[in-house]
Image (cartoon, rainbow, N blue to C red; front, side):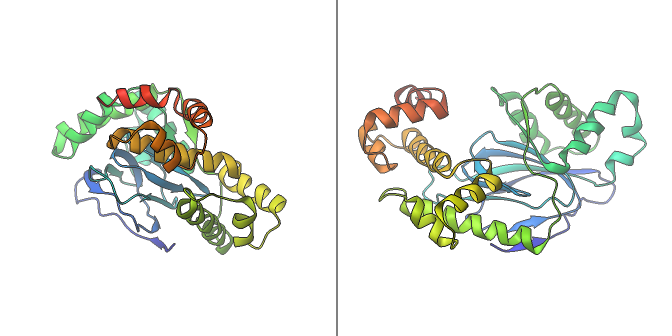
Length: 282
């Protein structure tokens, strides 16, 4: 996957810009000087932030600091609704601005400083922030600023936060590790129905299975089989939400050959049974 650096244009006399953008299946890993708040309005796929690689779905909300390599890549092109995200970019000079030196905004500044590793906000209900971010794409001036402060206020009250990336230098080693992990990801997605084997995955990187397992765990914070289970459940969740296929059929199409195992792992990862998950979309 290509790794590029880019400069996001924040218009003159503006500190922020919000846009609703399409997600792509072939996006490149990129980096820029600005802060970025990325909210997934629709779609799912693979998210890369620094040295963290994991899945994303609707409602995913991440705050990124300047110069942090990242990419949101759609991995399933057969999607009913067009995959989109709402992206807000802040000037990299915002933390040092006079306005943000106000005592009332100290916690906001601290939040922005923490974002150098990428912060994922886990919210049970994203309805309010989704509406505000959507509204911001059509606002300017003081009205935009007011809504942005509302967004910061919501983020400050989210207790469940995840730091995504380890502190890293963006060397050739970093890029090569991403390339290796992407080879494994592509193998899993291409073989999820027929069957995924640890021996085949490890041979892609010319590693013994034990060495491969240690490498994969270190780079993704998941064991290889945990990742495979999440991919299978992710595929099943999309089929449950977007098709009328029988749950038994979805079980087999997502790589399971046992309905009991499918139900167990789906509930373990999604927090509900496949039938309950489907009803939530009716």
